[in-house]
Image: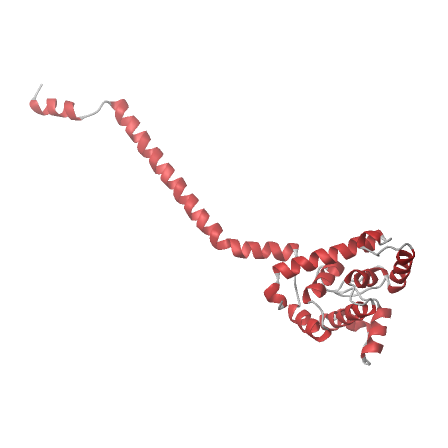
Length: 218
């Protein structure tokens, strides 16, 4: 054997060792690639999270026409989160809604209630089709909420129960509760629909105050 052949023999590793080394190199490269993809994905999620969170919030707790809500809250002395919560409970901010009872728009106002509001608020040019306009609908709904809050001495539970179940029913429930020396709490409201409605609005009000402070000017 020549000196060169001997030198080559001492430097070259057996084939199985070379194959194992190649496999280790391939594994290291794959791991590095996976880690690189994971890092890029993590960065992408971190960058996209605010937009994703906002989109989820908009689906679960929508908000539209916040400029009108802020303006009406100022004009009527109401909590803007309360107005937003009533709209959420009535229509989930979907325009063009009409109930089986004929209530219309974002705040689901009946034509009879709207005519009463127009008469008492001086809206002489009002027509029923105006309820399809967000500005008019929210203005009338906020007026009615203020009227009910004043009628029931600031008791939000009574006002919301009347918004849903009617003033006459709430008056009777209050009288019946007083005869029993009890308070008319949400749990004591006889109509299950109205009980659920009042609770839904009050829960939504808290969520709007927490999630949309800037948008509602709170």
